[in-house]
Length: 610
Image (cartoon, rainbow, N blue to C red; front, side, top):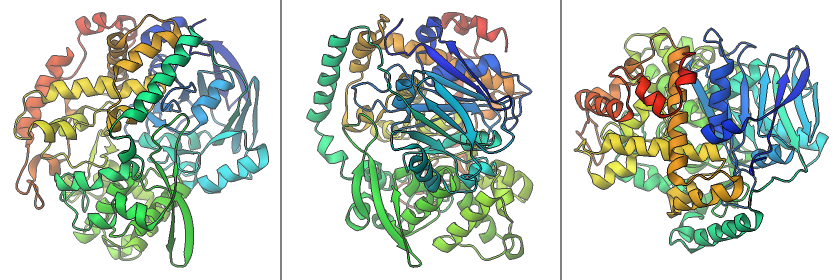
């Protein structure tokens, strides 16, 4: 048996109320590593293209990585994957916390949930004791309240993944929540869980993870921690976490403001990391194995009600703060709390709410349609819209579909400022004068998400007027960053404090016994990237170049204000970047992987089913 893997998967059929186990093929480990790689392989093999995302036939895959749960920096990551209700294509969303390690301690690398329960259900896993229990008493509760109730009922030893009312009501950007503030937020994975009447997954395990070379792996793990502690950025990072990047993004003109109308927010100093630390922070909070805890547990108050919330982290500050024009960290934190309890992805939620506000401002949505006035900068408007969305009530029934569908139904030119790619709302970086970041959004396999290639720093470092080297950098990042999701690790040690990548190539063979170095891991990551591309081609009729595009606002409207006022990469340059990107990837001019590339990546067998 390989080290790092438990060697077993769990299949749960909610329709028949049955469970079974299966062996993880060693070939999967060598070709697809784990995490999002296992998830992509399972979904590609098992889902028919006719599968509707919110039907019982869709599958929710929960996948750990070979390095999850070990004595390594940031080894608490877990992947949730499915066919996305937001895009109709491949979807995965990553979450930290402690659930990933717990699933491995229970003896599983992967959980596949299929079918649909007749009534609300909770999946409870205690090592090899697996049960599907009645979850009716939790249905209707908020995500935070549900997790507390589960721990009260089952015990503190259980790690839980839950959905809130948004997931129950099939909001297409509902998230899966864990550890009172960690979310698998993107792509509507919470809606898929809700479509199965599955309120929660609770796991407790006692098994040990096997290692190929235990002594050497332990020594290397210690070395990795000590290396993190020695980095110059180690002590600068923790006080603010991801919120610390707010000022920099604003200074370079890429901070989403007023539904991405511009990239500069005048009130940024009231919602930045320093404001968080000085005004609402209670304590730091880290995930399993984390030496640089980015979580910030905060206290805020609104209309006489005091709440506790993990955050806000940068993406929430950008999308609920700048993008909705909330001018205080207290207001952003409260909106964050509302999203967490309702089970809404804060990135998509901030995007959708801002879109609705712009539609209202332009007269495309009326007071009668919304049932009240809504305006940028007003927390009451934000909370009202979030609540309506989660309940699919009133205007919320339309907005719960996401900005792509909402704009298609509203029409009247609203499509120009519906900020999405492939149906997934854009995350917190304004890319219209950042060519690499723009290309990264255009080509991300799940739709617009920065976790696939956070290229804005490269744009700023080398200059934003030139296209040279931008496609190359995006591809490089698209292989490195998602690799962490396959391994089951957090990427922030590398991104934020400069922890060297070679360590991962050195620890992998010590843990697994697979003789892979860093370049072998990168090649596996490229294989996974091409497999998710094949999934989209297989499942979305006519999928190709036209799906790798960007909103009209990004391509046609020069920046109206801020430090890069008047600047624009433009549609022509975006097409040139896309041409270069396809060429470098070994894809056709329409974005289809060639047989030569698929043969090179050992994917011909999979492509035969495409």
